[in-house]
Image (cartoon, rainbow over all chains, first blue to last red; front, side, top):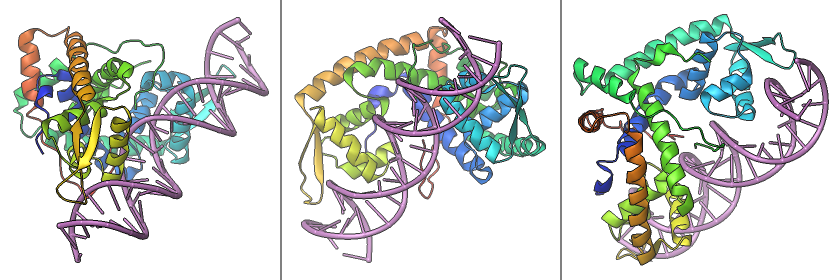
Length: 149
Length: 149
DNA sequence: TATTGTTATACTCTATAACTATA
DNA sequence: TATAGTTATAGAGTATAACAATA
């Protein structure tokens, strides 16, 4: 089937296309661990911000506290993180468990391997340029509150 | 909240980040038209392949025929496309309606405008390089059949 | 036997709204 | 009054499994 040529010069669509491929790879790699790319990101955020609370995690992931709750439940059920009592009695403080620390290392290894294959068609220099240019894309707008399916 | 530094050099994650921003913009632009990025892509595919059937459309969008059915229903309900009888009596032949043609032009205009803002931080030359490098990312793997939420 | 459209059903991720406890 | 966690409920988008009609 002929592909829509009007989109060839629309940056957003080229980003979408490339990112769907990367997302598919990442899901494939993380599947044996029972996680998704978003959940791995959550794990990394908790490791980098030990003791953070659920709402802050949600904001960092651009999801609301109710959705963050479900995500945290899954990570707790998998034994990868734990909720401890925070200094503020309203909050839970989130920490990685030893299992979470160990699993994360292995997952990142596999992810990096898949990432190398993703950029098989690029030279090392091109890959570097691509990473640099991607970081120049305009940062997210702050919008009233909307879902990003 | 501190952001996960381990992902800075993972191409897949930088693609994901940039594409989430672009996706948010595109949804915002298309919202008044009652469409999403995927539905606009469907419209473009039908315009570029007049008379195509639902299953082929689904394959081009990487969704199965059942999901393609629902998507086509929405576009038909909006009056943007129509089902005619195909030469093969099993299939529907899909065509844009005049309303679909007209709406598409306006939507693409707005989308291009948003796309310019997306690349505000890049020079014209950088934008061109970025588009070129994105096309060098490895094409999708063919996998048994799996969902890509 | 294989494929298309169709329907019924279910799963995932997200959201909103309301409630409780704490600040 | 404002915020964190929680729960119940709903919507979008996807999938699988079955069926009839057609190839």
